[in-house]
Image 1 (cartoon, protein in one colour):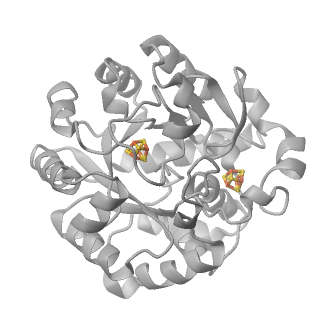
Image 2 (image 1 turned 90 degrees about the vertical axis):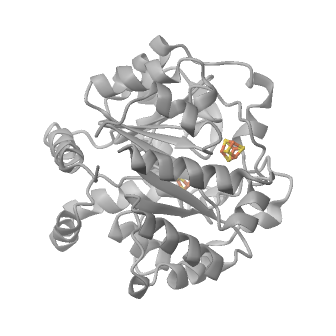
Length: 342
Ligand code: SF4
Ligand code: SF4
């Protein structure tokens, strides 16, 4: 099953409709975190550390659906924590896909085969498998031996059974660039829909801060690994890939990826959780985005190149640059608006 055309049409129409209604800020992807618990403890993970005191909490199916409804976005990225640990994850996915919304479920793949028994293949459902390198590098990043092989088995089986599969890779400081390229080529040859990439965000809660890469160094790495001559199938849209290489600049539009957690909506964004709110409208305030957050407004934003802040910015930017819109339409990449997680 390939990338459905319906996803691009629906997303495009949704954006145009919202613009015609005069909405300046609105959600494009709902980031839903039905729990923060995980069966791994990756070195660069901010979530399991930030939500340590509420790792035992889960969102009910009803809460998840209410958040998706409140946001109204056509795409839902389910993350966490490890979403497959939620006892009713299949009910959550089925209820959202029944509304013809597109679900991307991020997973470390440890329970992927179990998920396949509960969630059938559908054009509305896509696995996003966490892959940080070939075997040695990946197992080191997730801090457990054997995970790479389990993930590879899960991806092969999912493809064989007709699931949509993408991967998500976080680029850290000192990454072995050739190792990443080898992995991307292997995944492309296996027939996944595409590889998502993003630099790791510098979470304050992670003890080893040397893991995180500066904006400048990240762009050096991306200029190499995103070289079009390599023929790797990336899932991120081409304008965002230009941004990662440093060929264009955007201001962050993280308000388009509101994140609902066991404590409520994260404010201001998927990466920064200065507070949580129960009202999604708090995330669209003019003052917040013109003065308090984004590059140049908050030092914590200075090194950020994350897809949850800038991939949607590249899409919104096409309203000012028709040539960019054409480029996205040609690539069928309008829907790639910051789905992956950190
Ligand atoms: S990065 Fe993902 S897989 Fe790793 S500990 Fe965090 S939630 Fe779990
Ligand atoms: S620049 Fe990054 S950290 Fe700052 S608000 Fe945007 S997405 Fe969040």
